[in-house]
Picture 1 (cartoon, rainbow, N blue to C red):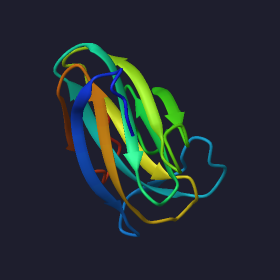
Picture 2 (cartoon, rainbow, N blue to C red):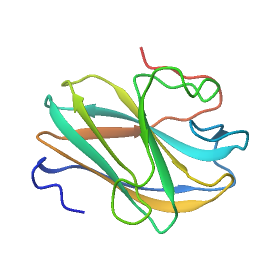
Picture 3 (cartoon, rainbow, N blue to C red):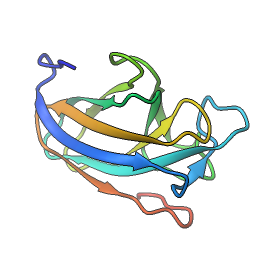
Length: 140
């Protein structure tokens, strides 16, 4: 994936969605549950960023201002399925420096497991931290 017009690689992450992962009813999914991984992302510099996935599994990504697995449409900024090559998602957003957002990685099909890579491109550095979910969690 080439995003040279957006900037350099600002963030790189590898992860897994397993049967032991947390699950939710993703936006665009009707009734079935999907495994997910949530990351709090914070940019060091304000600017335009693109998040892109890499996987052989059909992934689905969503960006949130804050996220609750029990209310997946609340605080939703946008979701994407296949805007990157193959079955990968791409999400573009203008981020303000040091403002938290939540990136949620899940699958298009319900109850599907996957390994995946994420990259973000933009003018600054992005830090990303796993958000453990055993209960409702929101970033204020």
